[in-house]
Amino acid sequence: MFKLVFSCLVFALLFCAHPAAAFVPDDEELAALLHKSYGPLASWEADMTFPAHPGVSVNILYARGKWRQQWRAGDAAQAVGVAGTVVSACTGGPFPLSPLFVWMVPNPLESWRAWGVDVAPRSYGFYGDAPCIMLGADPGDDASPAIYLDNEDMAPLLVRYRADGRLIAVEYADYMTLGGFRLPQKVVLTVDGETLEASVKWRSVMKSGDGKLYARDAIPSLPCAEPPAPFGFLRDNFRYPSTR
Image 1 (cartoon, rainbow, N blue to C red):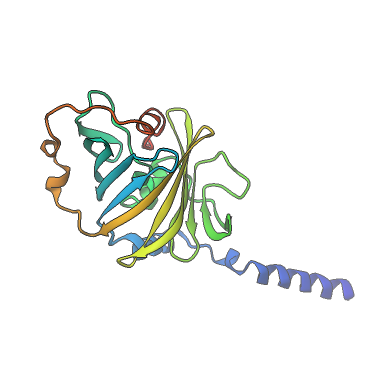
Image 2: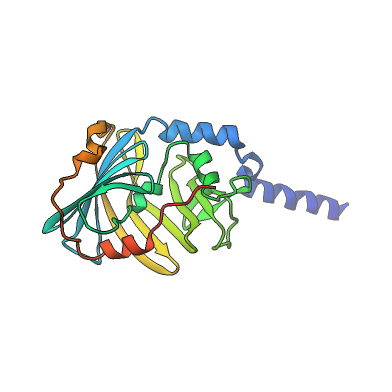
């Protein structure tokens, strides 16, 4: 009798310690939570800087997958594109993509599946000190494609996937609130063990939706010089997820 009572007590304590384990949201609930937090976020503008590369900054405009970048380091270098495709750039060669392009995308669940993240396995855990919903990988699995979302506001904490044979992980941290949306002020990109840290200053939300900003002819026809690092690192290493 004592063993039975003791076993029941242990079970109750474990259940109370992890109450959320019984309430992991299904696809419909998760989609609704994501839409509530980020569905209305149609556009944004931010400036990205790099602690290891002072004097280099990037102004980024984004609207439902379309984007515009202006790198500033003395002279300016500009490009426009859609998702992982550069539509027009003033540089003679390839133009880098921003890790912010995979932060929160339209139709996130469908997009993550297309990126190779198996969103069916999901559990509650911690990423650092933050309680989160883990999609695609359990704690301790550092290799599988995965999405970690803040347990309360659905803010992405980690986006990890494979592209062109590389394991790419992007961490988003130091969240702030602007216009009712939770936005990261720190981004850490890791590609096959190489890391780049960036700071993000958010300029506005819901004010960059004008399609003219992202048109091919919005980029000056005059050629421009390639900016200094980390332009080359991002160009050569960061890849947008390929769809399946």
